[in-house]
Image 1 (cartoon, chains in turn red, yellow):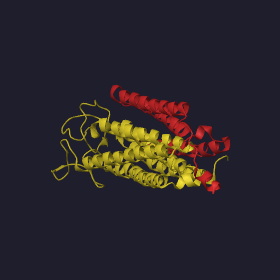
Image 2 (cartoon, chains in turn purple, orange; image 1 turned 180 degrees about the vertical axis):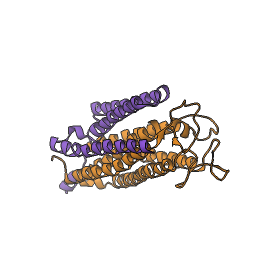
Image 3 (cartoon, helix red, strand yellow; image 1 turned 90 degrees about the horizontal axis):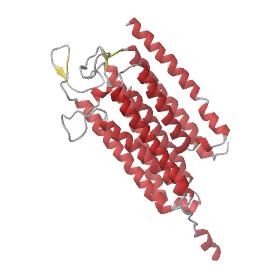
Image 4 (tube, chains in turn yellow, purple; image 1 turned 135 degrees about the horizontal axis):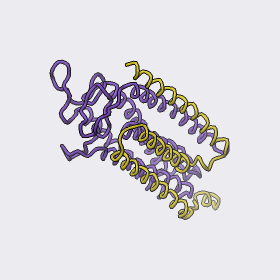
Length: 108
Length: 227
């Protein structure tokens, strides 16, 4: 009897203030980077430099989302690398295909 | 690998999903870079099939303000919504770690509402994109064409609208399934399934999926609306 009462009792821990503050900080950083992207979108001319800045900022945002929100930064190293290393294929595919596309543009 | 079977499998699923999205976005990159880029001034820009359109002249409308030019404002709102409901999701995960059922319920509701808000915004954006606005574009037979379909569109080469529909559509479908999963998790939380189970790991797993959807949007946002 007393045993069943014990199992239905759930211990609720108080909010982890530090952790919650850190999460809001990450959200703030994501918001600020997006705001910077907006400013750049309207103040710079279209060109390779603008594109590279956007790509760099996007990678920073992606790193924050995957590392903090998805908690990958705090996982075991084996898991961390088995997710990150396959991304090399995507990077290679991107370089190869965009290069090919620019080659097509010169023939058109 | 220090993670439970379910979480590990979610990670590998997301990796494979990342490859799918990369294939779509990189194909977009190939087709876009094989078209000529518009090199003139932004103010003088006119829609043409000769070059790829510049995003700030395509996405410049917001609901209820007809005729007002507000480039990229609406998509900025959508990005804000998605970042916010990523935060509420991670707060639900945090509450789950503490076995705090009311807090999990509260943050899951906010996440679901955010997801629905995003989908509604996308529905409006698609409607606007399909019906078209501005002056339209003259086509070969002498008439003016407004909006977009898979064959032709007023904004630029037909590939432009095709990729818009496929990539934002595929992402929107992910958001939709994410909202369904979130609702399932919310339902199970309310009925006490996870409390009886003794842990809220399902919130974490679906949270991973939801953050991934946010992650994809970060890339779609850059390559469709900014570059």
